Length: 110
Length: 118
Image 1 (cartoon, one colour):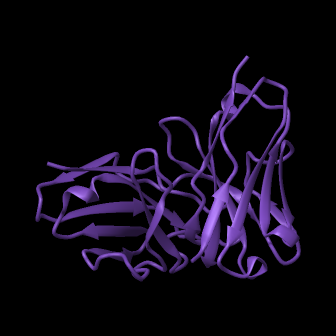
Image 2: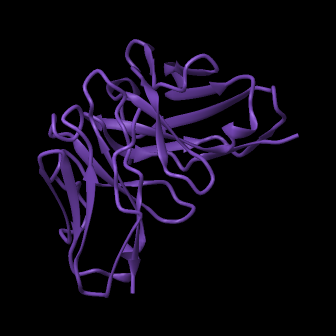
């Protein structure tokens, strides 16, 4: 399975916004509205932040939002806070193929 | 509340086998598929496959066939991952994750570190 492509790192100052891209193909990201995003702090299990491209589970702040255009999905974190510093991974349904995770993005709050 | 509790860390020698457990509580175990995800040290997440908790039918990702086996004991709401003929490159944290919707992992276990070293 080929991993979805994410930038290795992203950063922003507190209160600013940061957007992370997740690029796949028409066989995964572009073909289905089943992209999810996960936040992982060091030494912890991943946590679901966004599902089905843009839906937020209960308890996730509305500072987190998701979108998709063509083969690229995006996660935006608005009003950055210190606790948002973590690794973020996207994941996409891929039909009969093995669904891939993204390569991961380390978000730093400056 | 939904919880997935995994078994503790394991230290194994090359060639040995290991069985990781994932005990679910707070929901009907057979209503949601269970996935397994691997994370090697300092690396990203890798989807290993999933098991239908209704039928017990497993699906393995490419690269996780042959030595990896998913199983269930529905009487105790527990999923298992067994890895045989362990290699050093199997050293990783293994997570179970409930599939709450289509490839939406809404609850995760705390992870089990498997270390393979002579």
